[in-house]
Length: 443
Image 1 (cartoon, rainbow, N blue to C red):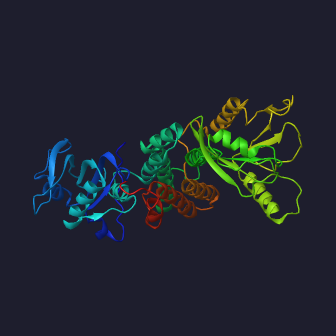
Image 2 (image 1 turned 90 degrees about the vertical axis):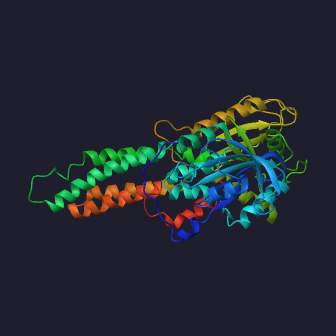
Image 3 (image 1 turned 180 degrees about the horizontal axis):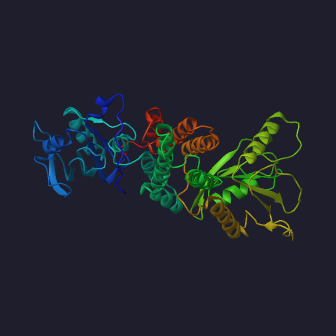
């Protein structure tokens, strides 16, 4: 992870961050090992109280952990000591690699609490790393994305952002903005002297072009981070539910010969081509006077309208053309080729025999990779980033049209503030809770 020089942002309840926290950094439940993390001013004294003395910094040591008062053995564990500021959070930190039984974890937790530490809140370790300048807000978000990654492509995108590449891009743009702002302010303060022409828009135009190109990504990075939604639509009894079950490799949807079995949208999560896909089974589309079925069809059309990809399924034995209203790409196929010949004009599969399913998976994977492909600069990964960039773009447009240097400078300052909110350099106190509440405890 690249080191970044950013000023720490003090939260209003600074005393809260002065407490020493602890949490399990590995999953709950029986396991061979469990990692316990500590961070805060008393981390060193707590570690010494349990282990007898501190080990050398950043050197794993095998110690017997004991209750300080009674000397009762808690566990035999590997311990690590990370004195500030060279730690994940920038504070004194320690890690205990315990045996992963509930009894050991509970006993160690109770002793740490009795010595004055408190359980960490979700994301509090990474939040402290951000507040102490160890990473910017983009990198902190990448930590959560890396923990949540379901696929190779998601992992790679999160690691790229964690390395600081997206933050580096925005800081480069912010530096260029500062240069434009300096020229505008010089024109205000030294209007009677020979200063660079503040109305020369070459650099401003170049920056606006770069931001616009970055925004024109068809949400590729956001789609990869969140996974794509593939909505399966078609007439009743076309085998949509059977196809969902076959692609998912499990019984997700009820399959019955009676048309109109599916009413509510059912979902299954799969990974194809390194991209997570949510398959959505929907009600069959036809004319109906049944109020419940009609509501199911309304929901099916709504899901198709907001999908990233639509899979339009027909019955090979009884092809019935229907119109799919969707702005997303539509892949049309005929199902039930085990009961009827494959239509010459359509891609065909059989959810029962598996014929054509391998090719269907390959096609879906190719479409998913195309929808999430982003060349060039690191991609946007969150709506928060996009909103701030749109605000910066609008401010730059206003600066370009500003009739006087004073208004131009004000618009440039607004654009600079928008970049600062993305990286967390300015004005993010109000969103920290919402960002870090999505993290797991221990991270």
